[in-house]
Length: 225
Image (cartoon, rainbow, N blue to C red):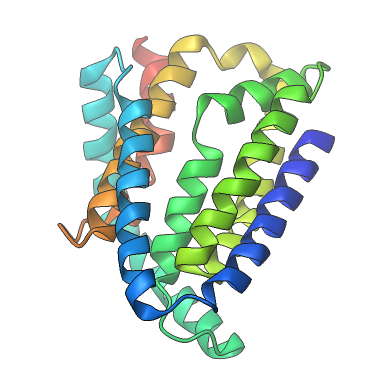
């Protein structure tokens, strides 16, 4: 579990540094910086999504997952949590849910995350997670300087997610086949593209309500692929 602990600490540390940088940014710089973050998020998402192979399963996962998320009203729950956190810590008008979702998808949904946790969970070296930790440190610094404290707080779901995958890998590492890793990454990439569009104010997609697609795609692949 040491790799996940290091990764969590890297995200939290990078997020704190990014928050300090944010305070020194004038509004004019913040505006164009958000545009750069939006383009960066879309580019990462497209690079993750472009390799998908089971298109119908990915589409079905997004459709079913979105309906489930809308039914559970995940976005409203997270927005309410964000407002409570902002009032509690007097954060101001940060884009809490957008920052949290972007950070979670960027740090948690990708081949390095899944492969790294499987490698460590099955008794291998945590080197892959160490490499990811270094990348996530700089990414969290960049994101937190735009979104603020929500990026640093993403270290909590990051730890829960990666620790859970590591524990699963200890008992059922063979479940995470290359196909599942590939298509899980693809779905995460598509959601990141949607987040990028929101950050650029091109659309107002309820990406948070689409998150159950990440679970649905694994279930569908286990059944049909």
